[in-house]
Amino acid sequence: MSLLQILSNLIVMLDTSFILCLYFRLPSPGKDMASILGQTYVISNQSGVMSVYGFFDLVVFFIYNQYCQGIEYINFRYKIIQGQLFMIVDQGFVEAIKQKFKPEDQAKAVALVYYMKKWSNAEQQYQEKVQKLSTDHIKACMPEQQEINALVNGEREPKAEELQGLKDLGSDIKSAEPIPNYWQKVLQHCSITGTRLSQKDVDVLASLKGISAVMGDNDKDFKIKFEFNPNEFFENKVLEKEFVFNDEESDLPYKCNGTQIKWKEGKNVTKTIKKKKQRNKKTNQTRIIESEVKLKSFFKFFDDIAPAQTDEEELVKQEQIAGDLSVGEAILEEIIPESLVYYFDMKDEEGEEEDDEDVDEDDEDDDDD
Image (cartoon, rainbow, N blue to C red; front, side, top):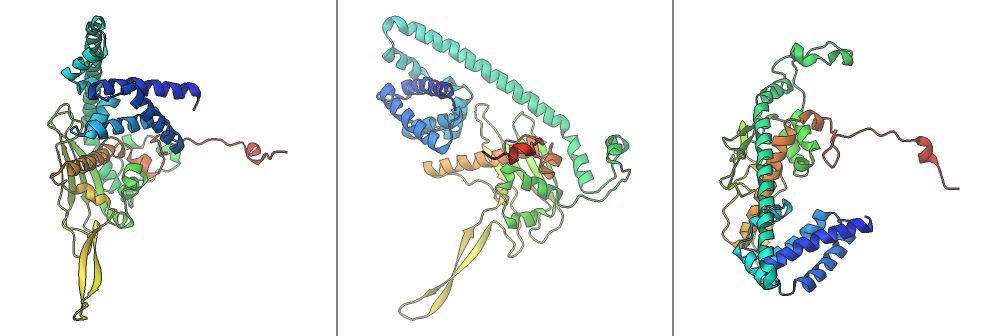
């Protein structure tokens, strides 16, 4: 990274951090933040994370952890990243201006806050319109899901209008046979879902018949549906995960419910029973102690998230909801419409389709003289 880019990142961080310091009453904004920025710069540079967002997260998390734990961290971070800092500040900001600015400059500072809020509101309206367009587009494409699953499962032959590119393949063969393990491979090749899969999950997904989504009446709610063929693992034919939002300003759903999976005896891939012998020192008798051990599994995606009883549990709950939401959105916005790309594993790590690059063999073979 060039010096200019590093300085640009520092400027972004200093500006944002100074505003946060004003609002959250850091005792010495300039000195404390200079120290924080210096430490986070070293950490970021050593870890190879020197993007604005990587650097930003370290600073924001520090401030959140020290001063703002009453706010949902994920929402707090998201609003700042989206340029909506002033959506979470109140009259306390104006009072901070009174403390930090000379009397003759206070009115101007308050007026500037007014225009920054207008800018933020305009940005929010823009994001809402984008969200509405995206939702309308997804709803318009919903009928195509049935056709995709019908072709994958061999429920019908391809239609004439669907075969416009068949001549390029040099084949006129039509087939109504199912594509083996189609959705299994799709989920394996998507980084968001693939990292959650265990080998046992992969075995279960061999019976996955189709994936679809249903949008709610508003622009946010949606439901993911997995349809399965009869299998040796559970009784359910359909597994669902529902995301329901009730707050326009919240970026996380308030309800995140899934289907209770009816696992067959000894086939639950989300947990195992660990047995341990225990010997009584007085009687010298032994007994078997059984304990339940949770396993890594994609199928935890369908679990309901338990209500939080403590602040710590609330943070864990928010992280779980955010994680499930990221999977749900990936299925809705990427996996369903681009399933064939994932089936062929044509996505790189950044989520773009891979391009073949020509490599000059002479360049590869050149050795330093």
